Structures are given as structure tokens and as C-alpha cells.
Length: 320
Image (cartoon, helix red, strand yellow):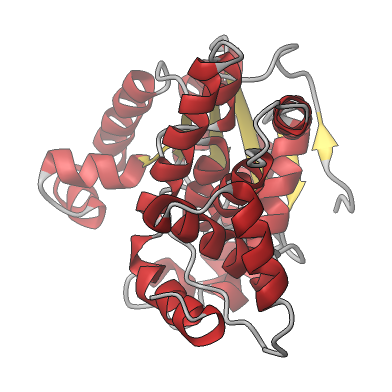
């Protein structure tokens, strides 16, 4: 058993797509959407695509046509999807058993294959109660044999991330680090912060960057107060016309109130505009306008929490 993440040969440049593999209960369908949200990429679950296109459940495909026919269909689906860019792709647990599927994912330029590694005990604990939809869980001997057979195949991935004791957000951080994408995101933020802090506009444009970045990248580890304050900032700016300085003053007023802030539910989508799009805009009016579009794009995704934010501003700031 390996106690640390294992990183093998991988693309020298940041990947165009990340493919998640691992045994059932490893967190592929949980981590995938969070990872995609952090990157502003699309998340696709291969099993969901197969079921949608076949018009029936995977279990039914197995029952009618057998495993070999299903694996042919699965390989063709992965082959088609794995050419997409800005994509997080989650595989079914058994996809890795097919050699040509492994070769495809390991050798396609721009693809990073990531194994979310868990012990069998973790699978049993996380999947407890799902025996009706996963009958293989009831057959412990065959389940253990399947796990042992697949584990060395999973470990051929470019990267293996131990996921047993990590939260989904921590797994996302580990994947971003392994993919050399987290430093890229941080560097972009630092570059944009340098631009806005040096901006000649006295209205403190930088505050809107802080709020947009915080809400777009919030996860389970984010402090409730940070998420709430950033959402208040976006609401006041976009719907009430507050400048950055006025938002900053509102934050200071909110901070006077002793409160256990309740973090709003995290949306799966965080806006189609990302910080890299802002940086790509020419400095000056074009970039300033892109910052405004970025804020609006992020705020739109948090609309289910709008009523909560309005209630807070009414209660603590007297702003309706």
C-alpha cells in the first residue's frame, strides 16, 4: 500500500483534459464536478453519456448484450470524448481493464489520467446502503478479487492520488497540484491583482476581483464568512451600483456584527468567464469591462443564494 501520492510520467505542459479513474467509491463523480468548477471546464461522466445515448441503464446493457459488447461501446464513447478540451472526464470503474482504453488515455496528447486511490474498506464504507444498485457489493469475495485485479491497472495512470482521508476539496487541490494547474491559477490571480491595485481609478476596482475570484473558487474548505462577504460584494456592486470602496465599507460594517455566518450552497457551475479570460483582455478599458462581465457571470451562478444575501444586507446594512 502506498502512503503518498505517486506521480509517474505525465505531460510536460498543463493538460487540456483530466480523466479520473478509480474503484467504486473513490469519489470520481463527486470530485469531477468540483474540479471542473475550479477550472471553468466541462464535467462529463462517461457512464451517464452511455446511458443517455443508449436510452437504458448500463446494467440493462450488460444483461442484454454482455460485458464484451458494453466494453466496446464504452471504449468508443471514451475515444470520442477524450479529444475534447477544457474537460474533466470521469470513467466507469471497469473501463481501465481494457488495454486499448488504457493506451488511449495514457498516450493521447494533452490528457492527464488521474487515479483516485482508495482502500477496499473505504469503498465498503462509502457505498454502504447502495447494494440494491450495486449488487457486486454483496459478494465480498468477488469484490475483493475485482479490486485486486484492477488496482495495478489503475496505478498505471499518470498520477495516483490517495483519496481515503481527504475531503473532495482536498482531492481537487491535490489533482490541481499534480496537473501543475494550481500555480497557474494563483499566478493569474497575482497578475490581475497587480493590475487592479495599481489601477488609476479611485473606486478600487480590486475589490470586485477579490469577490469574483473568492466565489468562483469557493469549496468545502472555504470559510463561510469569506463566501458570504464576497457574495454580498457582488450583489452590492452588480445590483446596487456600489463601487469597490463602498463594498469595502459595507464589509467593514458587516464585520461589526457577531454572527455565525451560514455558507450558501455551492453551485456546480461558477460562470463561463474565468480569470484567464480577464487576463487575456488588453489592459485598460477592455480588461476593466471583462472584470465586470466576470463578476456578472459568477453572480449569475449564485442566484439560488440571492435571497439569503439580500436578507443579510437588509438585516445588517439596512440595504433593500
